[in-house]
Amino acid sequence: VTDDVSRMEESIYYLKRLIELQPNNPIGHINLGFRYQQLNKHEEAIALFDHAEKLNSSEKLVYSNRAYSYYKLKQYKAAFSDITKSIKLDALNSYAYWVRAQLYFDTGDLQKGCEDLNQALRLGYSKRYGDSAKELLDLYCN
Image: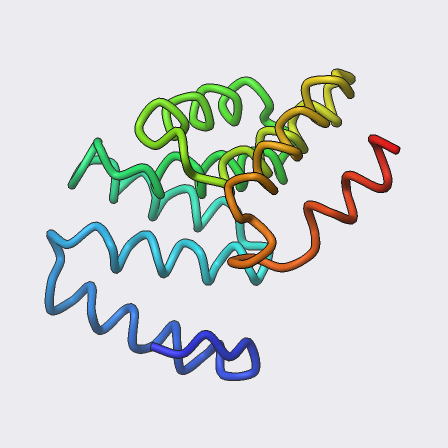
């Protein structure tokens, strides 16, 4: 499966094929949901994350990824619920803190948002995901 955005159709094809071959493997559903997020198809992504949760309710990626889709759809209560579960499952997940920071910013709690961005950076967010946490920190916290 490719991470090249220009080959998104190919990636989606292979992820669907993986799900056909291994329907009880939550990782295929999670990765396909992530691809749909990249296409701003958040409802479709949530449905895949819901299915992945049924297959493995202790998979942290289900909750952090679904929280991001809920955030993009401005469904903040559901987003906060999922991101809290994700952080409880893995307190070292820098992506989860990045998502929660954006939730805090959108709901007016700049202090908590800035704390979460700093935590995401301490946990290595930039090395894995790029500069978006630093950019948000500059925008909201400096």
